[in-house]
Length: 241
Image (cartoon, rainbow, N blue to C red; front, side, top):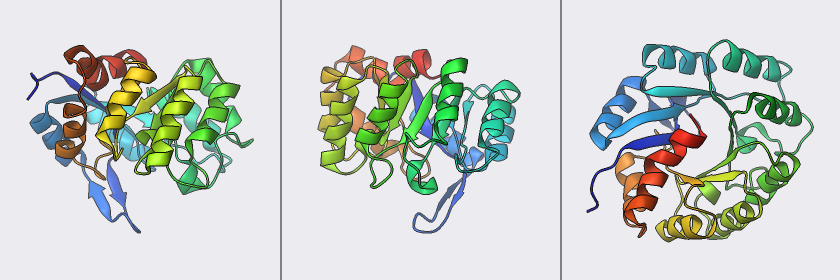
C-alpha cells in the first residue's frame, strides 16, 4: 500500500437521486466518508443548487460549490451568474444526458462564454449516448480552447468511450479527465502517461460510488508517488478550486 496522501474529490453530490439510480446522500454522511477516507475537500454539485449553497455555507472549509444549470431553462444563465458572483461558487457542471442537449448546442454557448469570462472550470458528464459522448465534449473544447473543461468520468464504464475520452483529451489541452466511475484502472495510468500527469483528477461521484472503490482504482493503477499525489490532490487544487 502506498503512503497516504491528501485527497481532493472533484466530483460529489448531496441530495436524492431517484428513478433508476435510487441513491441519496446527506452532507453529514459525505463528511463522515471524507474523514474516513482522508479527503480534505470535495467539489459539490446537485440539481438543487440551493441545497449546495446551504451545504457550502455550513462547511466552507470542506466543500466547494459548482452551479448545475439546465441550459434549456430561460433562467439558466442568470442562475449561473448569481451562483458564481453572489454565492461564491467556483465552477459550472453540465449534464447533457439528463437535460438532453449536446455540448455545442446554442443554449450551452452563453454558459461556456461565461465560464471563459470568469475563468472558471466547466465540468461535463461523459460516457452515455447520445448526448454526452467524449467526441461531442471535444467539439466544445475546440470552440473554447481557453475554457478548462473537466470531462467527468473520462468516458465512464464503456471501454470504447474511455479510450475516446483519452484520445479526445490528447487533442485538446484544455480538457481535464476525472476518474469517477471509470471501469478500467489501467486507463487511469494511460491517461496520466499520454494526456499528461497534470490533467487527470480524482473524483468519487458520491453517493453513486464509494471512496473505498474509487480510491482503490487510483491505488492499483501503477502510478508513481508523484503522479498519485497530482491525481489525488495537487491537480484539483491548482485547476479546479
